[in-house]
Amino acid sequence: MGGAVPEVWISAADGCDMVRADAVVMFRMDHTGRLTAQLRDEAKVSVTLLEGSSGSGHPPADFHRRLARAIAELADSSGAHLIRAESTDGAWSWISEAL
Image (cartoon, rainbow, N blue to C red; front, side, top):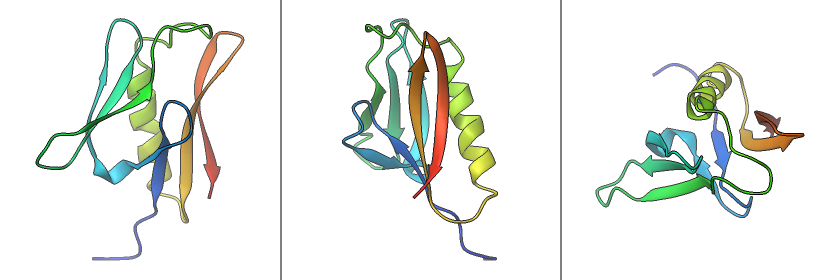
């Protein structure tokens, strides 16, 4: 295999937990805006990344696709990165920062 694979981490719902992006095999977003990630393991463990409808509003229907795009873009970079969801005045986005 070529060079080192960059580490991309996703901050879970409250920021207390992080999931390594390469451990995720599926994102699921339900009608409430709850976003979960299914991990690559035999138990098919799911981790909640966003709780869904809350005081900060509902994320857009394609928010899970935006996360996949952000992960793919960071995969071409160097170093470790953290991606987290942010809602500012009702506008949702994925923010990345170096670790």
